[in-house]
Image (cartoon, rainbow, N blue to C red; front, side, top):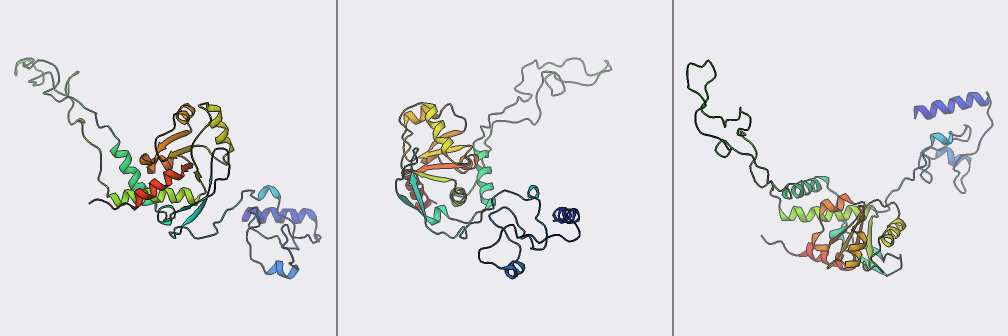
Length: 293
């Protein structure tokens, strides 16, 4: 704000002592001069957060951000059923689908997502690290030299941790790194991840994931048609199509999962989530299944 005020004052001094009145940069339709003076500062088309008064010069365009500010037209996390447009790779209209509000419109909680991701990463660690103790390391068991009379330190074995090739004290042993997390918390984490992608407009619903051939160039062309997409996760309801698997196996920014393998960490790693009708139905059915205790 200080930079804007300083730039405006410099332009006023350059224009002279009595500058000519200039119309507002973003005039409102049907708004007179009195209406513009009473309006508070707000955003017009996402280009500026200030209304230029009629008796002052315009703010330099290089100081105004051109980034569009998006505000949701409804409050998120209200468990409301949503209607999504169904398409395919060719962007053909395939109707609409209702997304359950208790799965795709839950309140966003970062703490739950953090707990689920930490649980996933800890559980997938192999835990095969191992070091040898003094009883496992190879070497003789005889005393290296007599106890007294040599002037050296006392040693009873050459397999100790202070010798080269000796044992490792308090080293890692094979174990499980998994931590416990309640099933309802894991389920809530998946709902939150799906709701976050839905709120961002990054959840695309496809009728199916059929491709005409196994050529990679087809998938590359389809991904380029998607707006602001860097990494895509394709989720199908059943088995993955063989042609689709061959077409995407050489693309590091396109990954495929069946609905049974959908998880929070994979959703967070991809900025765009593409799900088929069958995948959504299976996920909703999984979320509605009672938890076995």
